[in-house]
Length: 234
Image (tube, rainbow, N blue to C red; front, side, top):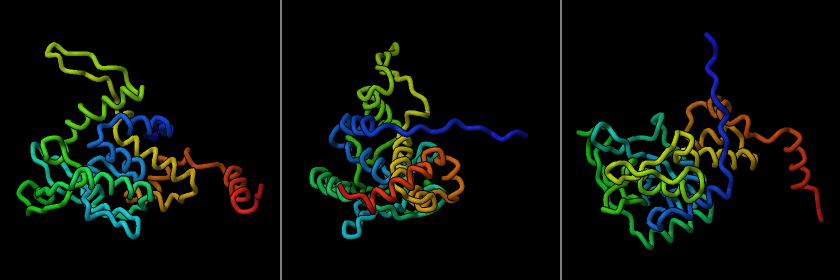
């Protein structure tokens, strides 16, 4: 059986990511910022709580996601049932503090892992306009996709017979693109594949390598940068 081929992932530009962030209403602007700064998955961002942020060590402890099971939502372990720790840039920590000052965390109770699971309560950083947790479809249709239009990623929507906006998108324009952007920045900065796999929550660094190998700087680039950073003086 021939090996399955996949199209190489293309990371978005800094300009595109900044435009997407700026296009978000202030209530949600921190969400794509942390997606780009820490590489969290969508459900992990929705389930991120204030108690997961270590401001002293500048770390994010990724402990849960909000997961939809049928018509219900639950707290659950991140994908691959693996908690992890991700470095938190200083500017992102400051952005969290500003966000929390303007929008106090939402004490949210959801069952753990299954609809009849034991209730757990966490102080979520992100809330929807009805002061409940964020639901993926609501965010996608009313926040993320309009931001994509502003950034010129997708065309303006058409209207269906009921005057609802209908956007033309594919899987290439989802929030997951911010994880790809994060990966590209980490690799360009010299972070190892093993470290990147840990930060992204991949169970196998080999998977990380297969997905992102084409984004790694060439050996000549690494050699020049190593000398430039240690030896060159203007």
